[in-house]
Image 1: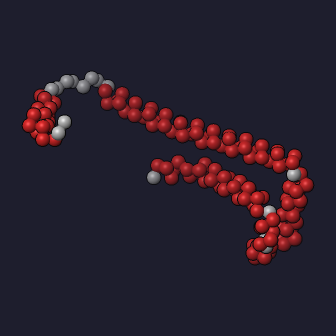
Image 2: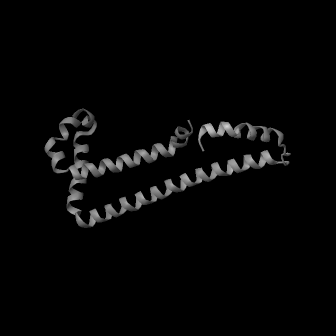
Image 3: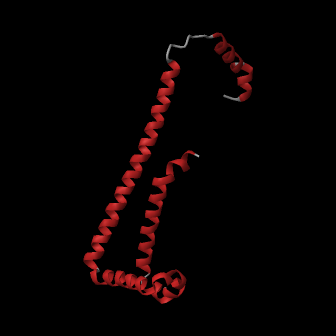
Length: 143
């Protein structure tokens, strides 16, 4: 319908008058039922979000576990060597690790081991995200 035709028919005016004249009593307990339905809908939404987070965490654990198992079986010497190198680096430098970290990791080391550092960064990022979401996630979403 065209806006001009609506004004010609005075549809809006007639509808408004009809709604003002119409009165129907509100059944007892109507407000409580509506509030309960709203609360149940909010609870369902929260429950769906929690289920999604749990499925994501489970999928992450399965994927990272499978990757770790595959890595240990396919590249056992390389993984043991890298972990041994990391442990040796920390034990040799002790408290001076923070001061010497720029010198410890050279460009050549990063170039040759970039896949490992990328995987470690992803695992660390996922762990930090999960920890932050677990501790303050709900407070951040409701603010």
